[in-house]
Length: 457
Image 1 (spheres, one colour):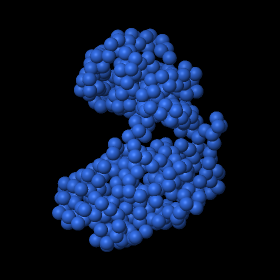
Image 2 (image 1 turned 90 degrees about the vertical axis):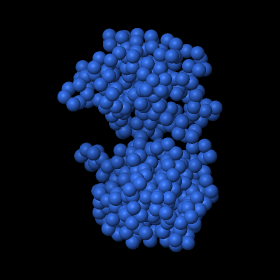
Image 3 (image 1 turned 30 degrees about the vertical axis):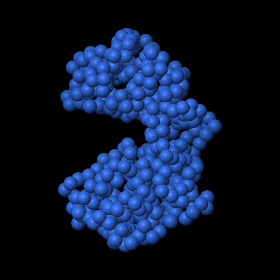
Image 4 (image 1 turned 180 degrees about the horizontal axis):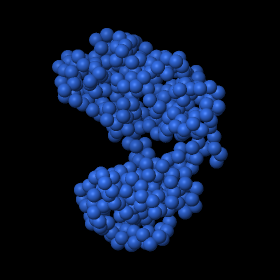
């Protein structure tokens, strides 16, 4: 069975290809992955040099102990540059063995451009390229495929299908093709979760990884052991995608929304609520936070009392996922820089933490203690914002650090804006946060305490 993969980057090679390779080695099938470069830039020479083989190293914690496991990946059948070998690429459209299409073209890759032309290629979007590919398959009289985008946007497959439909209309393609696309192709929304750091960035790590692998590998990629691929169940996808743990855990589900909500609230929400507290108290990485007793307890309390109870009725399943998140946070190899995670913290707190805060308030009639403290740390951090030249900085443990967020938020605080006023901004939060009784007063008092050097956690 053949897989067409748009994207040759580290994530797909350490995630999707690791899954297909595991299925092959476990004798569940013969998956042949054919990689296609989605954009013109970049080289595929290393694939040629290594005969399409490479290694991944999954570094993490197993039973409380650090572990590093090496996997040789050899499920790649071909790596095609369609900008220099268009015929090889289009030959896949007429291949009856092709059953799956996977893509990772970044969040910006799934988009529509009314200026795209049917006769174009290098200068058109990924959905436009896909439309042309599917049209060639339709013209060849073949059945459809299962399309699994992993781009990190909500309802990624629905968005991709919507773009394809627009190109069918824009280019005036025949009604038969539209009917074939609607009936024969299954666009399955997905959610993916594995942290991949990719090729080693420093000489010491590279030499260590090379020793583990046993040879120089120009395509080696590092990731964490945890991997989850939730895939919307459509058609007869279970014939081609096997659920269970096969390097990556695959879940075929009718409710992709649960997995999205769980990841956003548990993983991302606990991250976001922890970051500012960690920075203010001298931590550099998530691992630093989790090896600090006070910050670790703060993260655990937030999860157990204020996030987990509001994700789903299946508390046990959500708790098990939260336990895995804590273990991932304790991975000494990931080196998650807090200042990097702090990018766009205002919108992140609104999307990831405010829903849990609101659920807690609705149930208990009072503000959530740990989420309130996390928000206060966030406001205290933003209160240190100042501008030097064209850059914005926050002050962390006496050191000025470049900070990133929407310019209007940065300007507000750099110009001495008041925390309580910011909390009242409906355009920022979708509502006034001062409507939650006691929230404004608690945050103001906590910010004052933080500025005095006191711990809230």
